[in-house]
Image (spheres, one colour):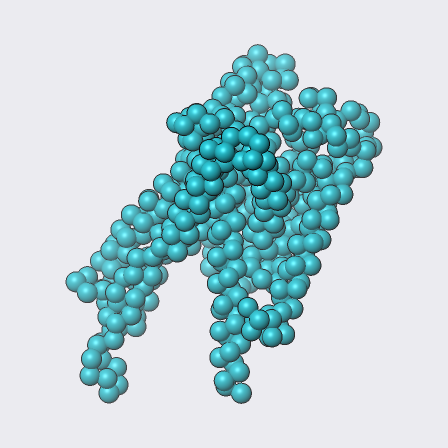
Length: 418
């Protein structure tokens, strides 16, 4: 660790990331003008629908801060463009144009983030005003609140890009990670008092389950299937050369969970506006969503599970192209033992990826709905292992550590060449 800090460039990246972390925590405690934060907190104590949203905002919603929306609108914009990549040929071609294409898509994603953030900010105002949480009604105050929330989202998006470029790790993931772990101190204190003054067995079970989930997340994230690839003789080498193609169990990483979290609460958020509609059919739809899509309901958790499952396959198909890998292996004169080069190699790799992704998606979905499973089977009310938050936190930490190791190895190698 000390060796890492001896490198000026790496040290500056770490210090910049820490500065952004502190800045984000400060922003999370600056409330929107004219809002009674005590009323907001009292409402959150009774609402399970927005509890997960408050978790990922790092308590920003509880404070109704200027960054209450977090990076949710930006993530939703990314989802939309990744879906469009599969159905719109021009966007698909743009995604294949290297760095230029990525920059253009990133620009379009940010442009779409603006109206999405405005829509989400208005939806939040509508929900809270219907619950009499927000008392103000004049147009100017409402406009200031909406623009403040939208500005907070765009500011976090910009800060996230700065972390990606000048700091350590993926900026957006780091911000989500900080939002999650910011709740750890209060959760640890609550668990301590539960063990000392409450139910010791419950606290012990909580710790055991958390440890099991932590070990499972690490094993699945780091698990790979190494596919042997042999190459013919090269130069004066008399023996064949064998390399390995590592195929991860979880190719998509933490992205499916982040995408699913952004969409899983949509039915619950739509329930309020639908119930307030003057149309009887829309009101009945709103009543159905209100009764069936909450954290303790089976439809909500099934919806959550299948979102995670589907996004895992979707994102893996976007990130991992068996045909391209098979072509690269063939072009370099390699082959998988017992498999013909070309289409047979592609089908073989595709089969492995599909099987691994299936079990990886099952695991991610299970982690996502773990609190519901434990409450239903064991019957422990209030149990929240935090599988989703723990999964994201562990994934971001592992990815950041890998990037640090890569930077350190690159700097060490460069020093040898001097």
